[in-house]
Length: 428
Image (cartoon, one colour):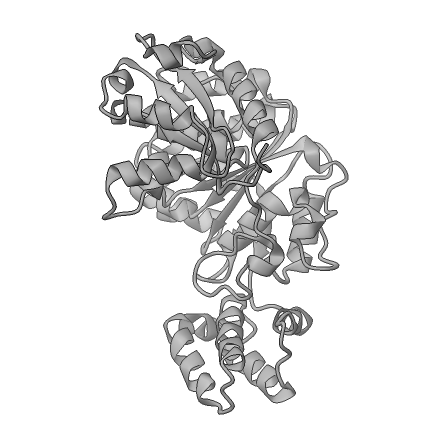
């Protein structure tokens, strides 16, 4: 028997584009929130490569192939090809795992009809079916985890998604986690200039208490909560237009909470379900809420008042909100012409500025090749100790060291790289 190796993805999802809304809004969301690595055509297929080649690569690199079965899928031209690929042995001698998911009744090819299906034909059973499916995929998946040695060392530009790269904010973290150690959970606002690290902080809150020590820096603190497994964290990015409507946002929240989704999914039904069922400590992280108030008219006073009623009166203190913006909650309400008392429930505000000197030096010292004292002082001065600027300048210095360059031209390059973020320094 060939030795079992690890795969790049936990599951490849094969589906008809006639069912794309359900696949992306419910199935994909649920799988990825469970920590599974998913390959899906519209996002992960290589552009300019024949579809057949992409399908073969996806199946070869995935531990499972999940077939979303509907009449439209059965009628597609790839049905037989994908079922044959998933049911055979791959080049490494591993038998591919094929999981049929019956979304709507249809006549199946004989090869698939012999297999036991995950039955999603009854909407009321979706919660239980998702739980069973996720548990099976988790139990049998063998994807490759990125080791710390494989990760980039300094991240300049996108928000920090891996806690290993997150430095500082110790004072803010202590205050925030203290809001959630006991019921009722309390609400908080995180404000600061653009590019000051608000999104990175939200993502850190979401993941730090559940990360394994092997994925963190030596000595990095993760024991912020006594029983972290009791908490559920939901991140909402209002720059994603899929959460720009009432129904889209409410569906996303219900799926994240592992609660049944009604159709239509309106505010009244959402509140009924959540108030009746939510008994787990839950923190909802609202990123770029200013975008929501400016762009999405469906998220009006009535909507925000409904959320306020939930968190203050109906879930026994198990729900809290954290919003991130460059303006305070009361300023947001005024700019959005909103009178909703939702924006009055944020009793703690964390205002993000530069890192303290000790935190900034810790970030610089994380370089695998130590920087000279002169370079360290220059980076501190030019960055103003803002996390993003520190990351960029450290990245530029490390590159030149690894390339064996001995001059100081990297400093000029570094200043060019941070030029578009100079408003951070001007905000001091």
